[in-house]
Image 1 (cartoon, rainbow over the protein chains, first blue to last red):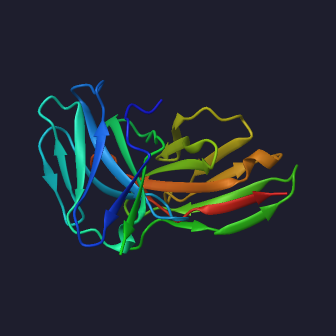
Image 2: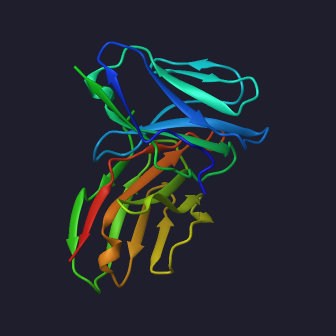
Length: 110
Length: 113
């Protein structure tokens, strides 16, 4: 019952910015956008989350459109270690379940 | 600060057996959630425990159960194993209130033969 749509895969050149889109057209006013990634055979790793303002941390930036129907995760300088499946998840902060979709498989190439 | 620790990392069982997996959350985290990941179904929520009580449950049969101890450590049990139970089992802990950000362990890879 994932509420998001992501492209199945994308490639990125090492050192360049990677822009990962996510559509969440049915998002409710109290739902946040969370991003996680999963490197092969490891547990998912939290990246960033936001409600309506753009957010930035040491890993990435999150840009949410004004109507909140879509967002973009930006990895500013992709490295080979950023190769992973990236999941965009929408949920109310008080919801303790994460509903993972298929995510976007990002391959960073040298 | 130590992360979420899951043991064992790998496990091989045969059909009909039962298995117990263990999860130690990040210090101070009282919420522990369990997920199953398979190639066909992806990541699916099993259940969540907080203060030794199961608060949320996913759509899995009663063969899947869990518990949480007073120190917040959690165990997950699967009885009468089936071939389809072969999966990566992931545990996540969180501080309720901190945007409920869940931090995952490396998982236990269970193979049922």
